[in-house]
Structure formats: C-alpha cells, structure tokens
Length: 191
Image (cartoon, rainbow, N blue to C red; front, side, top):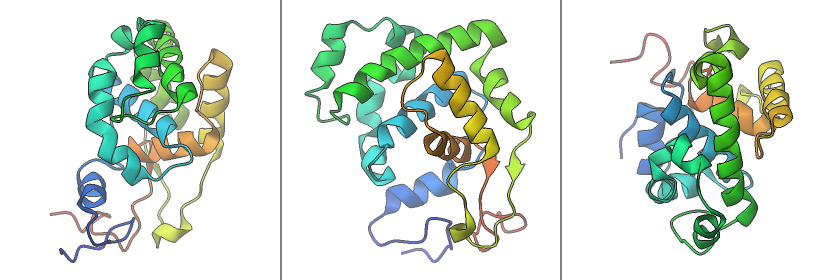
C-alpha cells in the first residue's frame, strides 16, 4: 500500500478512492461533457458512498451515452425505465429520470451562456476558491457559492442539486480547492 497522505485518508483496498483523489479531485475542469458527468454522478451519490458511485462509473457512462447531454436530453421514457433494472447504475427511478431533466436544463444553460463551463465558473469569478485547509476534517459541507449555484439550478429545473451536492461537485471539478496542507497534492508537494 502506498504511503501518500490523502485528503480522504489512505484506506486498504480503496484504490478507486486513491486514483480518483490523485488524478481528478480538485483539478479544474472546463470540459462541458465532464462537467455534466460529474454533475450527474454527484447527484446519483446523494445518500450513498462515493465508492459506490466510482464502482458504477463505467456503467453510468454506458447507460447515459458517455454523458453526451444532447443524447441524454433525448432519452425516451422506455430507455430510462430500463435503467431502473440496470445493475450498472443506482436503480433509483427519481435519480435516473432526473438525469434527462438535468440534461435538458444543462443544454438551455449552454445556449444562454455559451457553455456550461462559463456559467458554473461564474459562481467563483473564474478562479478556484482556495480554502487553505490544514486538515481535511476542516472542510465544510456547503458554502455561499454552493448555495447560490444550487438555488439557481433548482430555479432552472434541475433535480438532485442541493447545496451539499453542489459543494461536492465544486470540490470535484476544482471550483473549490479543498486539498489540505497535509495532503501530498497540496501546494509544494506535487511531483
């Protein structure tokens, strides 16, 4: 087992967590498809462990056309119903059907702002929020920015976008940098 200190802790048999932390979490994302993927996965995670979602990530990619928001927005009820029996995703009907609704809203946001990237990064004025945590246990579950993002997405019609879910999304896609000082990826420790 490697000895790197990570924000989520180093856990035996949790290579998925380690890989996700080291290669994705907190790195600024500007690709709309990946932003839609993370938005969907964070919503699916509500009430579950992130490991549960990471184990099903490829199943989600297959079920939702590699997170192409145009194709997801056009999914028929029958396709979504079939996913309620697909072990590759969380078989929660509300979460599954919300993915299509969220894709439709996502596309409307792209049209209005030019990209979802432009829209979402506007909530942090285009620059990641640096929280300067000493230990990951100091991380909060929501922020004024996640509250504002959540409220706006709900107003537009998205589901499973509460403030806590949006804060996790913001951490995941680098809108917020919550890598703690004791993490190997914090400033000065990369390499």
